[in-house]
Length: 256
Image 1: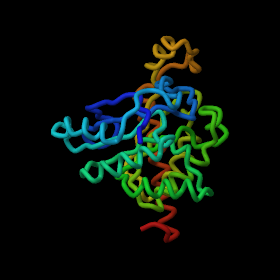
Image 2: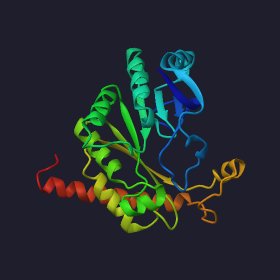
Image 3: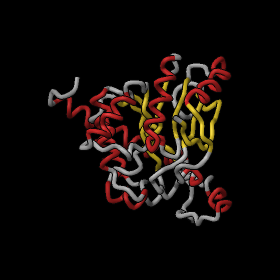
Image 4: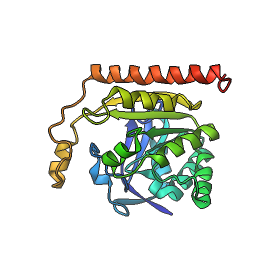
């Protein structure tokens, strides 16, 4: 089996713990307005590589991947779930730490065939980094052209499976940079006992040049980048709501 690969980064430092070998998968069903990788959208394009080819290349860098491992990102790697599963299964045979960076948008809790595929993949996944674009489903649709129910269902699924979870959330002025949405996000995350880390990421405009080079109009033209100070303020709102929810659950005897 071959996967469609957009690119590979051999010394990634922001895609999971430690220094990582990062595989960017080609294809994504989402159309996030702030996406900085529009060149990964089209499926079934890019380089075709086998799991063995990727892992053979990984071994060249293993001595330098301190405390790290292999991360599958994109695009949306779960559009190629069978290939990601094969890659992770072979990686675990080599005792490589595996991390899946995903939007979770392809999860379907009512579809036994889909959930069986996810079960097999999670058996060889050490960490999931989940991008929650917007906690409100209608606003999520406006932002990404998809509702968020599959994403939140996937987060709950990971909690039940006890898969360690890192959540990423991009704060965009006029879209996700409001206290009510941030608090709602925190209350949701407070229910997840598998949450290990939270990254509140400030919106940036570094993707604008790529859109221009691809001849695509940038959807958020004119919106300024979020400052680090604004991002830190947003994170405190989310963390406070997480603490609030967990205190509530402890009082109800639902959380130790």
